[in-house]
Image 1 (cartoon, rainbow, N blue to C red):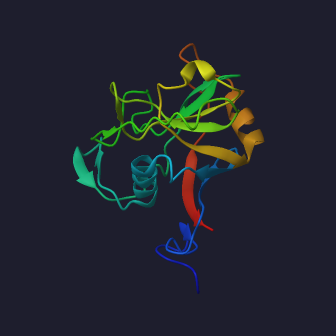
Image 2 (cartoon, rainbow, N blue to C red):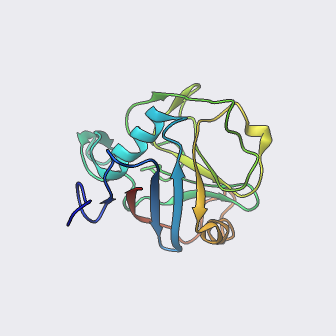
Length: 188
């Protein structure tokens, strides 16, 4: 099929001709479409896409070896706080896991947490990002300058709200897992 590159289930469009890049998170609660800020956080977006498509090596916590597989597939939103954030991307599911490496933060004064639906990396270590990300439920200007914002929800915000309102335990972990079934990357 013309215009398809890579795995047809995961990549749509031609990255060389695209002016915009989107990630479609397919979850057990519905789809969330995110416009990725490739121009503002290039390394972070490349890391996210590489992990999502399985093109970037990560350490599998069960076998403790480097693997190349769709990293986010099957992971959960392990932290949900109504009117604040939903957080995912941790292979351990407890907020302490990651891909086995860190990348530098890319904090830009040009983008901030003024709007709901901002997507940012949850810093694994001071000034380092890994695989964990969060999506804001409302403006969170108190977070400005502390986290790498690399996208914004453009469709499916009702899914984000639905995830934030699931029953959770005392540690804000959902009682029933909300799973990331797959992430598709779309170039337009």
